[in-house]
Image 1 (tube, rainbow, N blue to C red):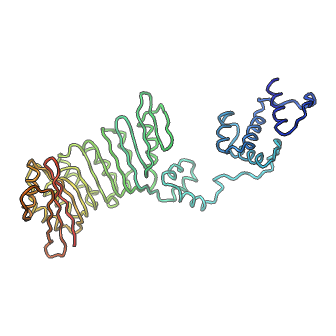
Image 2 (image 1 turned 45 degrees about the vertical axis):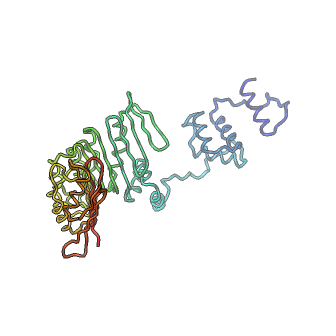
Length: 401
């Protein structure tokens, strides 16, 4: 028995026809697997009668007969007809109403739907077509966080806690995104920028916190950010400050409130005056520097609410002057210094405490507290000096009433 005969008897018995003496010669010419439509209908009928999930059934159908054989809306139509017991394969659909698409949806409703989407998913909708792009652009694109890390072997990034990465391979790269990974013959940097560049150049993009770190002098990143870039807070890490300044200068002054700069080496004082002259620093409210500053540098911090840096270990610090400078800052709320000196730890914090006028007990000290009333004010500076390992200490200063 060939397959066409087997198929005919199978479906007769399946539908309850138990006549073994049925005359095949009187039957119409049997369909064969060449008739793709009939095969498709049988498959959909089988899936519906078995009550298999429609999405899984459609994926299996596409794998078996090809993705171009039938669109999902047509597959869905026949699946639910068969599911409801309508088994006529020759139903004429020419009189059916034209199916609606997403583009037939009222603009107001599309705005409401896109408004409730995750900002990351909404951003990728922009690439679908112009009308949807216009609807997406009607919402202010605001991201809580964008973090990017680049090396000579990988690019990793997270967008509001959705993580992506692209790793270099001998003949391409491996690209990971949430719940999926892709092997590609494209260069890892090119593949990463294909996703990152359109995202970062969305019109009126706003980011609460932007973090970028790179461990090599990678010039391909020079045009990564549009100018001005609208971020409220930024962390930049590179092997030297020369690589940091182009990214810092892209930030919108005044809108940028918090700056955290990290570079290696930390003792390159040539860059400190250059940083102080940037509009981004002059209009910031919070600054954190992994570099050494001296007492004169502190005079530049008068407009800040909070700051954190290291005090120059190459010279003796006049802590009475440090206290005097900080007490004159009108907007000051708190700061933290890390101070190192080539002395015994206990002697270091004891020296600072005694310089501030504290009477200290004999024996090892782990913490010293000091309170200073700001002249002609009911406000105080509260110092906490804590011993750290490796000949260093942390000095925290908070303004209180």
